[in-house]
Image 1 (cartoon, rainbow, N blue to C red):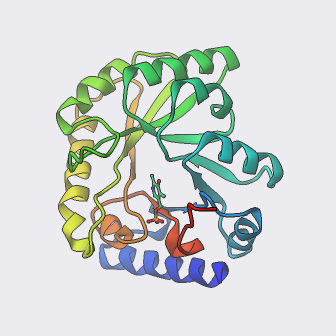
Image 2 (cartoon, helix red, strand yellow):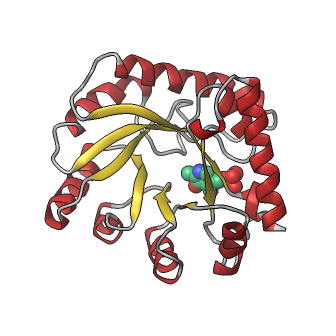
Length: 230
Ligand SMILES: *Cc1c(COP(=O)(O)O)cnc(C)c1O
């Protein structure tokens, strides 16, 4: 089932790229494997998945240990400062940086371990109270502060769009994040690259690609519904 789902998602990504005149190689599919067992990740690997997203540090670390080292792991969920030390050498990209204090902790660990940590700034575009992320207004100021920290490289922006029935409802959210990235890029801030736009999940990744996503995070569409009760 996972392999078939993966192929369907892959096909839909290709279609969205075609519709918007983009190359398939411009978009990275992140298979969001949170709560899902190793066997399912292996199935996805057989279908061609190489990049996996987890939202909890402990789960990412456990899966990292047992799976082949050629896989790429991204931390997509909220990160607590006391967990930073466990994840900086395992996650290739941290999508969820939304405060200077968190960035300072990441910088500290980066120096200690002599790493350069790639991060995205999470923006709460729709300003939902339940969500993490900086506001649109505060993003540039936060980026200017984080950009000064050693051991950190800001690669772009991430957003979690609202849950909606019709993905078209999120088109403006994605367009707004893209516009913010373009605006910030034009300021040519040292140590800030606005190449990555992580936006779009199972319900809306095609719309996100049409609006410029370079990374889409798809969980349910590949692995099926999650059961948090077990
Ligand atoms: C769980 C999660 C996803 C995947 O959501 P689906 O709707 O299952 O595709 C994407 N991004 C983040 C940050 C998540 O926590």
